[in-house]
Amino acid sequence: MGYLSNRSINLLNAHSLLVVVSDQAKVLFSAAFFLSEGIPPWAIALLWAWHFAARLLARTGTIRLVRHAGLKASIILGALGNALAFFLLVPVHGLGWLVVAYFTAIAVFDSLYWMAYHSLFCIAGDHEHRGKQMAVRSVLGMLATAIVPAVSGVLAATAGFGWVFLVGAAAVALSALPVWLVALPEIPPVGPVREGVKTPKWGFTLFAAKASYDNSYLFVWGMMVFLIAGNVALFGGIIAVGIALQVLLFLMGGYWLDKGKGKAMLLGGGPATIMKIAMQAGFVFTPLAVIATNALNFFKDVLFDPAVNLPYYNRGKAARDPVWYMAWGEMGWDVGAIATLLLVAALNYAGLPLRAIILLGVVGVIVPGWMAYKRYGNTQHPAKGWFSMMRR
Image 1: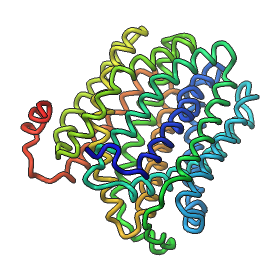
Image 2: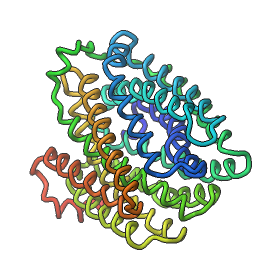
Image 3: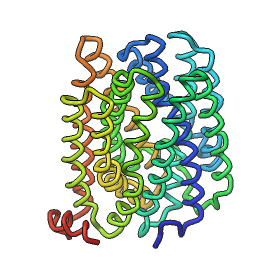
Image 4: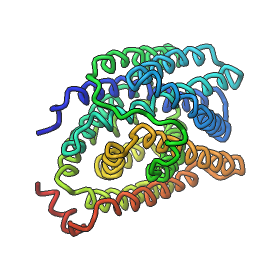
């Protein structure tokens, strides 16, 4: 069937499972932690904007390191560095130099890690089974995010946020082992900067647009859920229930994608995601409403995102220099994230409520959706594809 036929991708997916556990602490619970420490949302947005600016500044050095150390070693070094960075958060109480040091440290290691990871996943994957392989990665990640927030919420409420960060550090450190076991495919040599600037930059624009969703809607929505829940234990439980509702549907999404239903998935997932954002901006005020609207994440996570990512990975594998192609995508993400977070901070500082700010996420749906849609060609009637794929 193609879901588990590639050993290298299976190992990378096992690695991703552990990284997702770490990311729950790094992104989701660090935002709740900073709010509980009395740091306002606009200040948290500025901290993350600094993080992505530092990532962008570190790119030249990390690309050179990837050239000399290789993809596997770069992924492992980035993962272990992120694990160590968590220890900077354990003694934190309020905004101080340790918080700034943390965001700077993970910026450098993220800059190294994500470029190498996407490059290896792109090169090691199979064109004809890419959708199924991404679906398995997503299912494992969703299983982790269905369990980890609930456990982390209870852990944070009973033992403190420090233990959540220590668990995240342990998970990302363990994630290095599956990468070490990956059989490295033949990788074209990474060219110098003068060659890298000639690499096609479609991924730069795509990822800049995708970043506007994650760093407006997802970033602000996580803080909204925490404020609605009122405590970290309920916060983790709400996130977990919403995720559990969609886990098994991911495998079908990968099957549809490999059957050529990418256009239909974009047309079904994009408008539904915009509707979800609008509903959450206007009508969500209780934990039950959060769970109900989070179920609509199916359209974004199962239909829309895989259909956007498929042409990105396939174009990257076909590029003359896949690592530089992925590097441009990552730089696009940094630029899009910086611009979005600065706008979020400015709007929140000016007094605009969080539920209005999440509407910025609509841009991160429309632009990448349209870019990916144009890459699927005109061999399939979109409406027919949308209805027919549900029967296969």
